[in-house]
Length: 373
Image 1 (cartoon, rainbow, N blue to C red):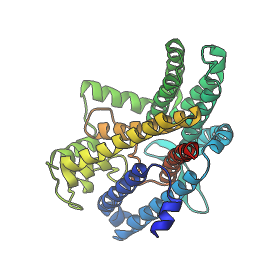
Image 2: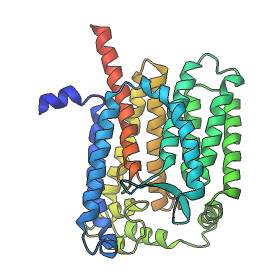
Image 3: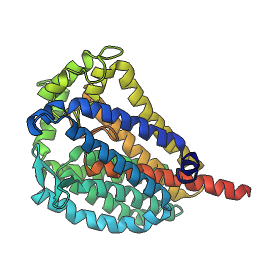
């Protein structure tokens, strides 16, 4: 068994370990938070969502393993195709997708009866594409012509995602700016990109499904006019957790807090595991970002370095955004906590994302060993 692991589990061991620890947190927290949901929809079968989530975690690790075994350079070849596929899917989702909480972000896959978010495919393919095209044109970035095509893709994909999910679109736009910055794109061109993203967000606010909701939530956050019910319950969970928490499965607010197993699962973690548990989760995400940037610094190939940094930034920015919402530092969004929140295909895409980062790490080690040989 140990020999098999040594031969088949490659890449940064810290990332493998962090994924395993956060997934363990996820199992405990989701099992606790889905109790009321199980009684209302599954006749009291509290193990139903536990087994379903456990299966998704196993599938995400299988996806991570396959993604880390594939040479990361192949992802560059399929990224633009994936973007072309994701655009009609995003438009179809906006027009005919499953409407949950006043937002059509999902397409139901009939055979397996599983919801799929096309935005997961779009954001992953965009980050891969940007990393690829910027690495190929790294000596031409002084010319604005070389940036027209990536700017177009950033704007159009952010716009299509923002029609139903403004917060994810903003995080993707911010990640795109960071990738451009790391690639040494000039500030004046970055300013143009900011204008493009802002323009896309403005169109989405006017024509999208969540424009009014986003504006009202921002106003509530700035002027403190009204605290949403779910945020009020999250505050109670966080404030009663204390230093060490109430203990696993002993949350009281899980029975009152909407989306306690997804968007607000961090509140349940703090209530059950206290400030120590909440800080431990935050620290794990920061270590994940550090390891992703460490892979970036060690990579001898621009594409691998940019891709590792971009994917790491996106995952961690999403995680920190979710945690900030729970403790009242940002307006309420529909952002989940990667690797922890109960999800569907988003869990698989998170596994693929980590697998790509591990593939880059694996190739860094192999190239280093080859140079020493």
